[in-house]
Image (cartoon, rainbow, N blue to C red; front, side, top):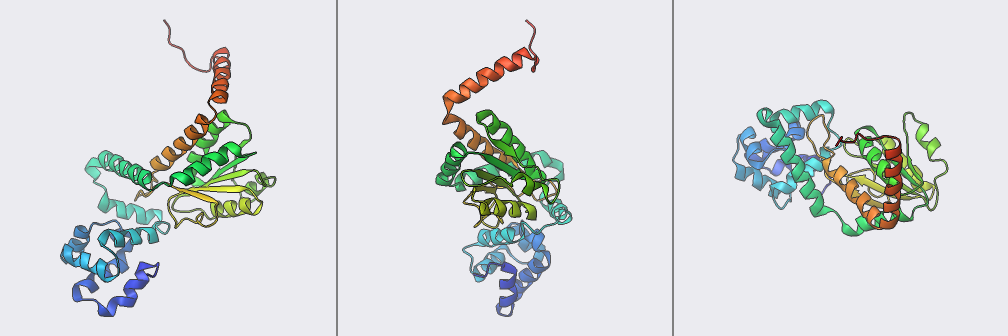
Length: 287
């Protein structure tokens, strides 16, 4: 099937029934909203029955409506502007119960990530973290939070961990100029994908480093470039990106790496506790 579902709809329009043409017209004009509607919601909006929407999805070659909706979501995930996301969120998020809506949505993303994560790929990344001569961690925009978190904890586990700064077009390459064989480059990118993130990944790979992409799906620019990709769901439909599942994945990677070197980790934290105590780093409760 053509990867662009909108092209498929345009190609097949002449063979659609009246109700199906109404659905296709609405989706073509409002794909950013339709991609996140249930079959019932889409049918009600267009003025057809839910069963007509389901048959429409089958007519396009999908097993069911969820398959068609997923195809729409994958197509537009990296295309939606912040303004479009806000408009979609108006229809999907209950303003009276935002707390419940957001938390339940994050729970769904965690469950979907757990169900779809590839354990062998996860294990390979942990092995790479342990074996690497040097580790370079890079992310842009909101994904930078994930890189900061990962580099902080990996620095407690081992030497040679570098957080790549990228405040200008040349800075990233300057910091990566010594990367090479035996090194590991870990990049983060989530929709809307940063073009510089993809360029950084390609540069590290061209220098001979092992590369890991932590991203959301096979539609990511990291897929097919990074040696290994780990996928975590991040599909918040608004101007705020949900990073709950990606952060949980980072937690798992750090803990898995730490569990492989328990003695060294114990010695590190014993030393840190002495340093923290001597320098009054943390507040202590008075007896």
